[in-house]
Image (cartoon, rainbow, N blue to C red; front, side, top):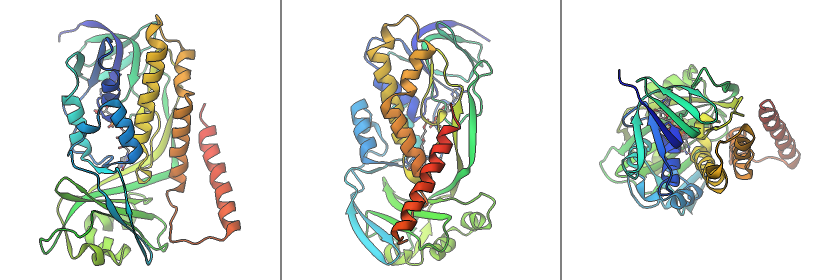
Length: 380
Ligand SMILES: Cc1cc2nc3c(=O)[nH]c(=O)nc-3n(C[C@H](O)[C@H](O)[C@H](O)COP(=O)(O)OP(=O)(O)OC[C@H]3O[C@@H](n4cnc5c(N)ncnc54)[C@H](O)[C@@H]3O)c2cc1C
């Protein structure tokens, strides 16, 4: 086993969308930067598959929008079906992407002066400059350590950062490709379909192109052990047509064109993050409901806030104190984005088919506001 010790201005732990977006955003500024990931390339996991307009703006600022894969144009005109109502709207700048391919592209296109290390980070010890230990035995020292390692229980025994789960908020998402049984193309660019309110655990489905594939994302609040979840995994299309009875009016007869990926998620946020020289970004800090499409917004907001703090102040400091890192967590943009993302998790069961009287609307809003306040308030 070879071991070495190296010094950096910034070490990023995790080369997912968050870590790589940050590396690109900080590149070209005469900084010593390293990014470490336990995997050489990102696998084909079901994660964000759409870039929304504000996310596209942020990626453009970071110089990464043109690195998405496939590099296809916006989805454009999309049908919105809720109950009997069918509307067409233009998504303006919404793109279908393959998450793994995009992440791998971002990694391939990193500038040469960013050190890319394939290794598993096993421990992070904070100090004047943080110490990052890896499974290979190599050690890095860095003024700033950015944890961008996604959904992890506990990264380091030396940090008191812990994940606090909130099981009340859960989701189960399904992703798969479809094709028309007659081999013809689809007659729409994109389709969003909200079911009638008979089963409140089924939120909505969205159909959109990723390159030459037609992708379906189905978002639910099902428990993975729910019989309906099993039906959706085992008899996907038949169950889908039961839940969305007019689906074939829009798609024609359809067949599966890929395996079914189903991913359970629940809300969590970390505690104990007031650590000198260490910050958490993206899913490492707080999870999102996939149904809300706010994951990449949270990632990109965190990334832009770290860049803002680092370039405007921290880069000139000899070391970054616990008080300094709190200016990132208290950044107006970050706090607002985290709050909106959590709120939209509660609002994800909003069904546009359901008409509500004003008192019901007001009471629902108040109940939801209270829940969000409690979910944020239980964390320091
Ligand atoms: C099913 C699903 C659908 C979603 N749909 C959407 C959507 O439509 N729109 C949207 O905006 N968001 C969506 N999201 C959320 C979005 O995908 C995530 O918020 C985003 O991908 C998080 O990126 P990240 O970089 O923080 O984490 P990740 O992409 O998970 O990256 C973490 C990286 O850290 C590495 N790592 C972990 N531990 C270590 C270690 N110890 N040492 C070294 N490396 C390590 C991993 O290998 C990985 O490469 C969805 C999420 C899911 C689960």
